[in-house]
Image 1 (cartoon, rainbow, N blue to C red):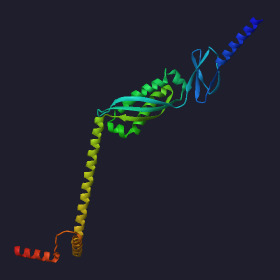
Image 2: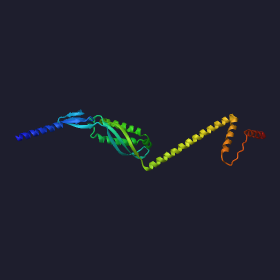
Image 3: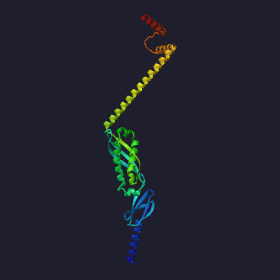
Image 4: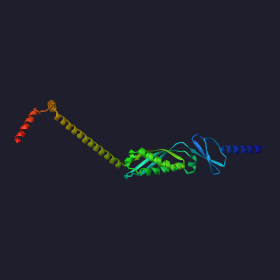
Length: 255
């Protein structure tokens, strides 16, 4: 009698274990790639999944966005500057069956592809472009990665270059270049200011030439400015009419 109970107990345990192995529960962000006797038979989930034990197998795939840190890469720019660049990659699985069947390990494959693509794209640009045009470089890298990972059922949503490290010598060279650029701009601004001032003086001289009275007023204003200055210089006003008279006399003597 005890033997019969033991047999029933063993059968019950085996039945429960088989039933437990036949039941799977997938979360909302998970999908199950089903294989029946080794052949792909579809994608299941989310929710409760019933399987045939030892006949069907299931591979879980997470559909959430994955944040992948791309290790620092040694890159030589187009102008032969050696830099270290690291980035971060955002992607997610859109076709679970392709992510399982087409590639052995889609995480590792995407990481390696991101590293090689980062070196390849940045190597075609100069250092100034790496520092000033990151948005454009991010878009170029994302487009290339998204095109190549499409066969794996992966969608690359974003790529961000985090940091571009350059040597101390190159930092000093960039600082000198920036200083020279500031000096050049200052000289250009100063020259433009002198040009505009000279033009205004010519226009003022032409206006005064058309109205002699304005010359007398300007002469008086100048005397007032000199009088307020604390100096030992004594200025004696000389009428402009006298200057014209002297000029006419000198011309007549030469004739």
